Length: 634
Image 1 (spheres, rainbow, N blue to C red):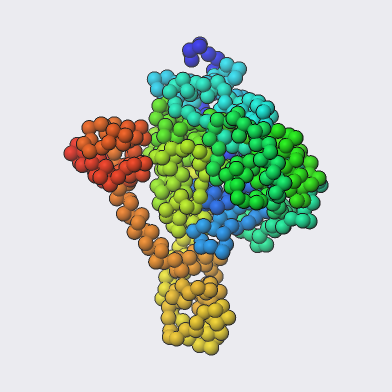
Image 2: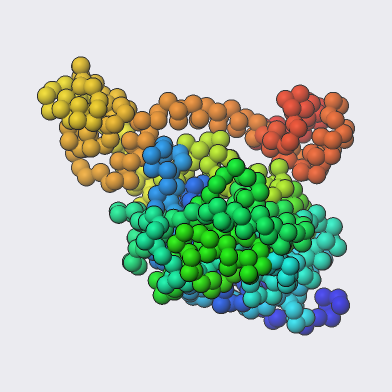
């Protein structure tokens, strides 16, 4: 049926978002903050912003993404602070570059809080329907069609479909079409995307069983208590008012391993039913037993799913075994001998779009105005989805409003690292963020996300003016205090010697700048407060920033030089229609890769797999010979 023959909803939207998980929610809210009218479609509005896997937000590398989303006006950190039932800061014994926040959340309260935020936004309409078809005219998106055949018009569309594209759940030899347990999948949309020529793949993820709290013997497990004095996740937020609960750690046994090995053929993963690529960094239990055959036991973390719920999330026990095997392997874990499974573990495989099909804005190269975000791009995790959702939502709004696109470089944020990885390297397994992926991670700390990104958020209309004002004041406070500690001189004496000796540091032999003393191992800002206090009150946030800047001054300076050097390559633009086939010295394989990925600058070209310095020089020579490209001039 042609568009002109269809029944259309009378309202034309700036943006339609298909999917209301963490990616869809952030995409909609970001575009709405920029003044766009938005319609969000969910298969089931009762699972908007659901937590179908771990009921937690953040973690190593992921916490940095959440803080960056927050610095750009996003909702995830704020909702986390409203619903957290446990705060933990990870890697506290390591440097600030890898320290990350993680919250355990009441998953039902999280869903309800996010739904309320979206319902109360006057620019957002929420609709319950399955999107089955895209409307495209002359290579540009014009709207969507739902499962009833009703059409909805829009100037841009964000697909945030999660695991719903051709979703198939596996429990042993039983398979059932589903986007998540109990929810309809989206098969028609997946077929249309393939018909349009999009490069699609298949991936697999899963979720462990949920156990009844009363059936677990926690007394034989190690208790993991919440941080006693947590900091809010959100920059302008407060710590959760909810009770803070412990999680518990158990371990599988030799019996667990035996059960897995004896029943491996019954696993959907090893029984040949699953074709999708599994997550290497978050393997299922049967995968761990096979891949780490020499390991006698594996960790199991039991986490509460909510204050009013008796369900316990059994992290580490994910599998695709039949129910009778699941019961046996769960009960083989010490402390779970009488455990009752409330919801079984399952594996799910689904279609994803090869992210090499995307521009750095997350708009598809094949269809103008069509953006994708989250698991449809081959990623895993709520945090990765939220960051992509915000990125796609902002860029969709920019397209509609004819504004310059929103792009962060690898030196500006973890979000920039992730998007560049996706659109430059593609994926062969579910992509997960790690601090090791960020080459400038000392600059991209969780604690300075607002200082790095809030100015850009303000430029795009994403950030609350009061929060921006508070950030600007904090930045001034940090600069003033940093100047003070560099020029303040501390003299040796018995009191300073005693304080330093107590912390394992040598006494001062001569007068020295306060900053030099703070560089010492074991010396924190308490020394400054005691022996060289500021004339006025200094906030804890400013103290932390100054201490990091002082202690890591040399490392930070080195990374800034690396950023400057890399920036020279990023500033050499490559025109969209540049013909790599005419570049002498490039292999046919590299010509094909460049033509497919279409790097926007020489820096991105250098990150394409197989691109050597000689290849980059050949491209640069060809660009200069063409006479149409220069630094920052395009």
